[in-house]
Length: 286
Image 1 (cartoon, rainbow, N blue to C red):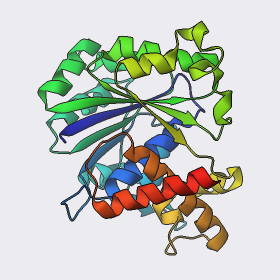
Image 2 (image 1 turned 90 degrees about the horizontal axis):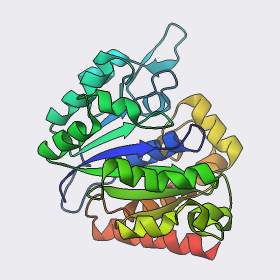
Image 3 (image 1 turned 180 degrees about the vertical axis):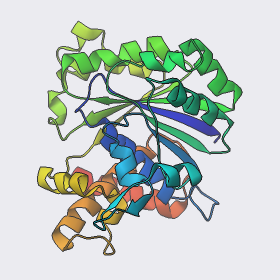
Image 4 (image 1 turned 90 degrees about the vertical axis):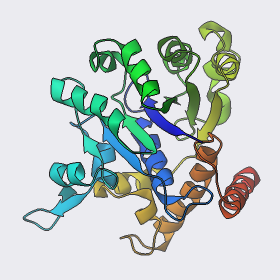
């Protein structure tokens, strides 16, 4: 289905953007495409180095003096398809890392961008239009994943993103149901959507996709975040959690996988499609 450069964006921090980035990376590195024995090669970038949520959870780690496993910048640069590269768009080195990633042999490039506008991306090659051109020249299709809250400013992002990235990109709106019930996204496709240019309709016009991120119990998610652990490890009996937390994460991850599958990033095996369908049926029955 071709190589893809995925940019995960939001109008501000705190709306679940890095959670979506983690779920995407977990999905792509865990579930093989149809006909493949191994998952895809994903080169992942955490472009919020001060927080480094994606890197801390999915990057390669070494034990510190107290025995705690912590993110290692050196290991991640040595094994980029297994780790996460942390870089800042605010300095030349970070911008060069992003630009040079286009020479990678990766099936997917995944960028967890800082909350807010994408202005710093234009500095990679001097202009954002040049970056977009170079991504295409390198053989990657652009996928813009917009993580939305129920607020007006978030809904506005849909039209703004299309204006910035152009109609040739693939767009995904992720409605974070951990922040509000589905019917409360009134500015996206509800009774006040007219005030922000009907974002859901605009998304449909450019062939975009809407997916929903299910709610994960706050205390469970807080522990995962504090422990800097991946979703798949948290759901596994090999992880640090007892059955109740494991099952919560398992259920969340099954539904999230089935939502991500709607984006169509790759072709899936029959077994994977059956698992996604079962997760959707479970979701509908709740």
